[in-house]
Length: 539
Image 1 (tube, rainbow, N blue to C red):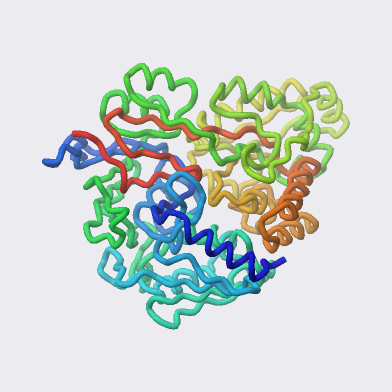
Image 2 (cartoon, rainbow, N blue to C red):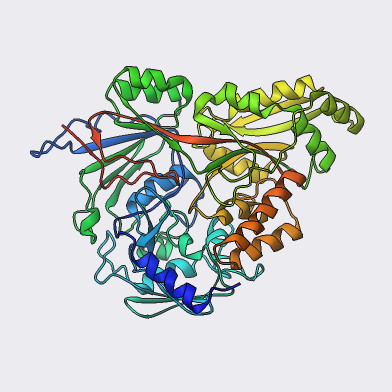
């Protein structure tokens, strides 16, 4: 249902009143060791160090936001690219960025954006309405390719009857986007760190490799990517937004796979900030005099059943699996105080979270009997080895904990593990019965979580869940304005997930990061990315 003219105008006025201090957002974690030439001690005459090094658990999958769907990539890309709109520094409130907040037509279908004048990409080409249109057009049908995992999630599809119908650029500073149907989360989608950021067309035209040689208009410019080692960025001294001018000359993202090795690098002063940490290393970080960033995250850690093939296509088989695992005990044992037990897909603090929704209760005897009756004695789990923002201990330890519960219920579970980058391909190509996955919210809207189970793209909906009733609810939610009616739709979605069990929901993690006391201005955004332009380190 579309907004009334009055509510829509009030919405635009309210959004316009939000602070213009902008920060983008999304998810991620990844890292390894930098070369000796990466000098972390240089300083300027002002007493601010020239270089800050951020250590994460893995390489990015790529550096063009149209072709990746992971947080490791997003954390780096959000410093290279701008989006039409952005998230505020510590929330998912929308603020202007490349464009002012849009004028929205009364029927909720047409968004008219006025862009900043004179913005240049890092290669000197114009970041204008035609460039933004080109970025969106390449991700719309029929131009969209199968290796654009976020395109349908952000821009919709003709088959769903939702999303972007057309994009026009009548002049350099005017962009007009027309939707097929009214979409409440669309304005937030335009600030997301995947698919939405604006890449210089010169970076992908005529065979150019934007995945490895990104060109944006953001506060930092890409310098190099040494695979398995680091990505180096340098300040964009000609950045167009004087409120977000980069304060540190160089930012290095190092890739250090092991949690303990990242902690050691921080405590030794080799790096300045680390993420992907778990409860076991917190004392080591703080006892060494370093700081801990800790805040409730916007994420879900879950296990997906393969709903279209394998041992758990039957609801009773999925129920038996869920009965076999003591999720509450497991979460407390593995994560301590740094994660909470998930009783639904969305985090507890996000509307329309319903505390009355009940997941399948732990009942090992019932599970053992059901597995025997169904003849299930074995299954295969795919998992990842790297730490993730929703699973700080990595997938192997979590998989082994689940394996132990299954064994007690009479089922032997084979665990097949891969590094994160390889894993994201394997869940699309290989056979499995269950797999571990997770999600960091992109924009603070409930659709961003619940829509995963309606997505046709396997990289989003790894369990291949298909349910027409559920999909219809998702479409209703998209078209319904904020309020009780919309909340009720998503509560129905949450209940259907609890009843149908396409996932076994596990936990919601806190966002954790360690950093040197010399670092100022660091904030880990709820969407799981870090914007480095305002971060400094005393020399």
